[in-house]
Every structure is written in C-alpha cells, then in structure tokens.
Image (cartoon, rainbow, N blue to C red; front, top):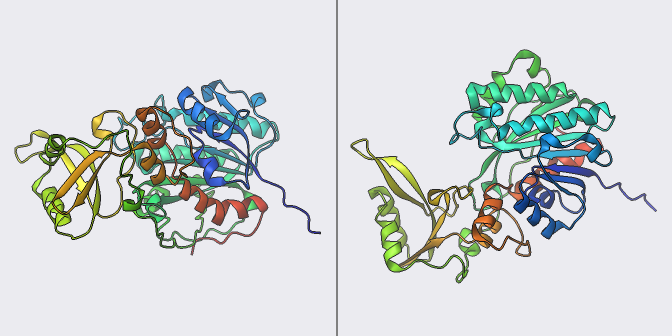
Length: 382
C-alpha cells in the first residue's frame, strides 16, 4: 500500500477570519495563527475552533511562542500605509510597518533551525509604487536576506469571483525548492506595474528574483446577480426617497448607465460606491458611481459611509437600492454560506473588507504551493 502523503503545515499571521486557511484547504494544517484584532480573532475561533489563534501584537511575539517547524508562513500584513488611498507612510507607518515584526519572527525561526520552506506575503498593488518603489525594494531585500528567492504575482479576484480585487502576492521559496530558472514575466499574472518595479530593483535584489508561472485562468460561472439576497433583513432595502437621493448623486454618465439597465429587458444588478470628485468648477462634490458589468467593486473596510458598497437592482422601471449585506460580501470573497460571520454588520464588513479572496488563495495553492512544498519541479514563467 502506498505511503500516505505528509500533510504540510503553516502559520497564518495577520490572520483575520482565516481566509488564507480557507483557501489552503483541508490538505494543509495550521499550527499557529495570530491577529491583533480581538473581534477578528473571535471570528477565526468561531470558524476554526480554539487552539491555534494567539491574539496580540506581532512585535510582541516570541519565536518560543510558535510550535513546530512550518512548511509555510503566510502574512497578509496591514495595507493602509501602502495603499494608494493612504498617506504615504509606507513600511515606516505604524500599520504597514507590522511587516518588520513578521520579518523578525522569520529571522528568529531561521536562527532556531525552523525557517519555513515558503513564505507568502499579500498586500495591495500600491505596495509596488509606495514611496517611489522604495518600499517594494525594501521588502525584496529583506526577504532575500532571510535566505529565500523572491517572486511576485498580481492576482485579481475577478478571475475567480464577481469582484474586482487586484492584489500583490509575493511568494518566497528556499533556493533548493525554487531551482535556478529565471523565466520571463507573462500576462495576466505579472502586470506592467510589477515588471517596472522589478526592473527598478537594485542589482543585488534582482539576483534573488524569480518569475513564478501560473496557468491561464479558466472562465468561472459565478454571477453577481446570483449572489444577491432578496430579503437580507439587515441591511434593509432603502425607502424610495433614499434611492432617489442616491440616484441624485449620479453624474450624467452614470445616469446613462442606469437608463441602459432599465431598458435591458432583464433583471440587472449593479454596485455603487459614493466618491468625492471635482466638478467642472473645481469644487469637491459627492458622486454615486454605478457599474452594471457583473463585477462588484473592491470590498473595503467601513471607515465611513463612502467606503461601504451599495447594490442597485433594476427590474425595468423599478429600481431598488441598499447596502451590500454581510453574507453577499462573504460570497464575493469566495467564502461558503456556512462561514460564521460576526453578528454586527460593521464587524462583518470590516472582517471581509480586510480579508483575502479565498478563491485566489486556492488557485495559488493548487498551481504553485502544493508543488513547491513537495519539492516538485515548477515551471518558470514563459
């Protein structure tokens, strides 16, 4: 009888509700999880049980707190200081600077003879250009100094789900697992912004770079219209005057989209964000911007009314609006309907807006992580 394969293990830092764990699936075993946010940690425990979640600041973690020798360490560290919408603090910021706590932990594991075979660091695409590219260069140098070859992929959740959510996945592997083949960047996984960022790296960092390969994405059959609940309860459908007020914030171009949806002859579901724009006089005005392309906008944390996403359902002349529900947001992240969400709406939306698209993690695991952790050959990008 063939020997049973050994189950690979991982640590999940900045774990939130465990969406990396959901994407890695039952074939991988979590040894340790960490998050600073007690509410997110409660969601993690509600879905994954007690035992591995440690609540606290990563800067206060000690290597002695971490059990075993993991095959993978996953870190979706805070993005606020790297985001294009942030204030430019970058890796020196109080939030995104948490990466250095992760770097310290991996260095400690390396000293202890327990360095993971693989690292995955996930963040916003803005990490490529933050502080003129210096933050990306610092990330690459720091990871290479830990003894890894480094590569990255730009993966949009829209390849797998009806949500636009482009993210940067930096994948690091020990040299003996990755091999020496460099390869070349290829679409859609290596965006022009990533190629430019790598070209600007110092030569010493480029020596450690790899262009990882993924197969072309296959078309998915998940439709936004199928994810929408008729009666979510909370949040409720808007009163007609609230819907009219939202429509009143639309520009002529967005009003034309609405009229086209009314004339489509089928039920149309769109998503709306309120944004601050400049009008023709240069004054700041609030606008409601709608899209009916079957793709939801990128989920965000509810840092104010403008960051919460609305849905608009159009049945001919009938138009209804409301906030996107927590369950609908969970579906847009690739989570199953039995995933336990926080009871409070804002807590659920915060958990999901800060989270990982599960389907993107699963695709990365199936086509790269499973092979690398076994030491199987991995094709370089063509």
